[in-house]
Image (cartoon, rainbow, N blue to C red):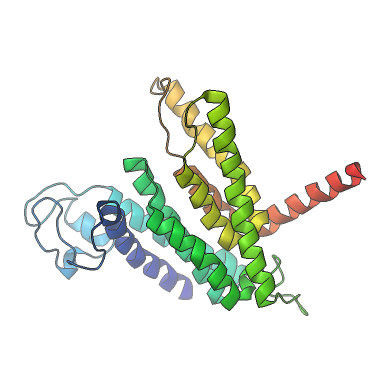
Length: 284
């Protein structure tokens, strides 16, 4: 029942994220006016605004003007519901993660979804999201230091406690390491290609991720993201749609990598720790 409630709440949140995706890049209020058709301006009544259900009942058309409703709306709702459900199952039910930590990861996931869909459409990542996210990470970490406990310690007897200041330091370190990794590639890409390979929006997005997941998991996110980008690039190349100078928004790949890494953080961080240990032995 709790898992079902998590999914339903995710679907509802996905409906709100659609509003954010549409209005934030246009500098419009996400609160007022209420939901309305972007074509005819007609008010959308509550029974036409039920996540997923209304889209299929209306057959993807506006009730007022019969204009086509973008399939992005049910897609965002479905992805948000899936994310809330997977996080709840893998983190809360399986790993014993506190609800405060679950909430932080869900909020991060929402910010990543909004940023990704805006980046795909407009090739821009809103500062309103990334700056707020980079402030949210340290503040939330200080209030709920469990966000930076070692993976697997939530249900262990005598789990190592993390102090507020330690959690704050971990969050700030995550911002610097995660953002610094992408910034390094921005500079190297500029030198090697003599054009912008990645934007500063990606740097800030990665900093937002690092502030919540910490530096270790953000390192894994950084190295996982190119694999998703490579899959898309190969697909476009095989279709003949990838041309020289073709721009590919990178926020979706960072977001996918983060959303995959969060429920798998235990084995991923242990993998990184083992590599660090091996390199330390070789270095010594």
